[in-house]
Amino acid sequence: MKSSGSGSAAGAKRAMQVCPPANQRSDKILVLSLEANPGALVLHCQGRIIFRREACALSSLIAEVLPTARRLVVDLGGVTSLESGALGELVLCQMWAEAAGYDLKFSSSSLSIRQLFEATNLASVFDVHSSVERALAAMQREEIHSS
Image 1 (tube, rainbow, N blue to C red):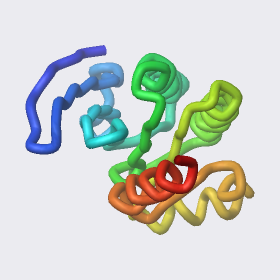
Image 2: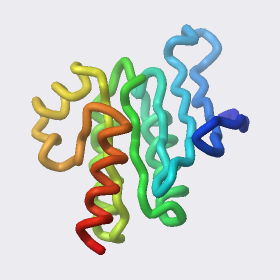
Image 3: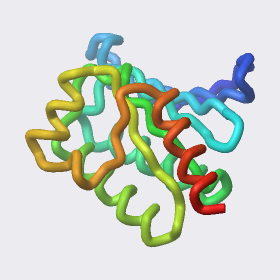
C-alpha cells in the first residue's frame, strides 16, 4: 500500500493506493482518499474492489477513521466493479458502525452500483444516496432532528 497526502478546498485529504501485482493493468488499482467536510469525513473510492485485499483495505480505513470522525460518507461513485467479498466487508462495517453509534452513509452516482445494492437487498441495510452532497445533507437533517 502506498499513502500520500494532498490538500483540498473542502479540507484535508489523504490518499491511499491498493496496488495490484505488477502484471495487472493500472485500471485495477483501488484509490481511497479522505476528505474533511464540515461535520463529516468523505471516503472517495476510485477503481475496482474485486480482490480480498482491496475490500480489507477499504474496511480497515473505515474502521480506522470512523471512531474519531463518528460520521463518514463512503463515496462509491468512482467504483467500476464491486465483488461479493467487498459487499460482505461493507455489511460488516455497517453493522459495526450502527452498534457503536456511528453514522455511516454511502453514496454512488453509478446506476450499476445502486442496482447491485437493490439486487442483493442491501439497499435496505445501507443508507445509500445518489451523491455525496445528498448524503451529507441527510446527516445534517438527522443532526437537526436529534438536537
